[in-house]
Image 1: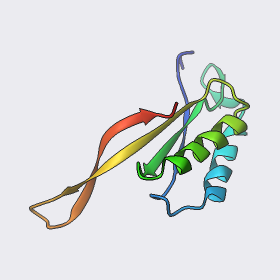
Image 2: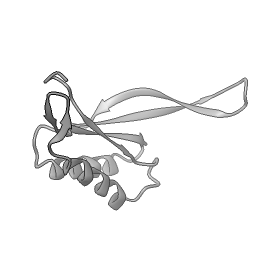
Image 3: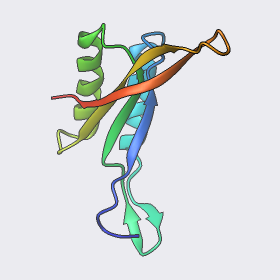
Length: 106
C-alpha cells in the first residue's frame, strides 16, 4: 500500500438516535487502532467519518468533532459528515436517501 493511503473510521450517528456515549465509544475504538498490519508496513486510522447526520443539530456535530479531537490527541484529524436529503421515489412510493454533500467540520 502506498504511503498516501488515508484510513478513515466510520461512525454511524443514527440521525440523532444514537447516544453521544455510543458515538464516543466508537471514536475511541478507532483511535486505539495503532499499528494495523498492512502490506508493506503498518497503518493507523487518520480520521473519522460521521454518517447519518442531521444538519439540524450543529451542537451535536461539534460534540462529535470534540470526541475525535480528544481521542486522536488533537493531531490533524479530518472529521467529515454527510448531509442526506430525502428523495421521494415516484415509482415505488417510498423514500430513499441520497448524499447531497460532504462537509468537513471546521
